[in-house]
Length: 126
Image (cartoon, rainbow, N blue to C red; front, top):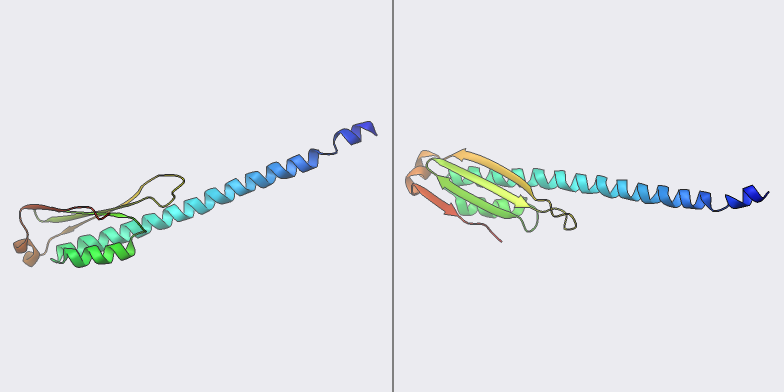
């Protein structure tokens, strides 16, 4: 009977460890889903920014990309020659500062090409 009494708290400790492990796995799964969702949103925002900039509407593209991107995302647009390169960067999880980047390239349409300089940059949005 003394051996049985020595194991009295073992089940409680094992249950506590199992619950901690379960909470950790759940947090990692939720964090992974949030990161993938932010990545998709960044890619969608970059695609729209590049597409509208290629049509000659970079300010409209910036407004739409800001709505599509995660909160506090950084929007970069570079016009180089006949290309519009858009990059959207966000940090979806504040506890784990891993940036997620979406990038898109579009060829400028003929009318938009006439309106731009040879190389111009529209800086990041805070």
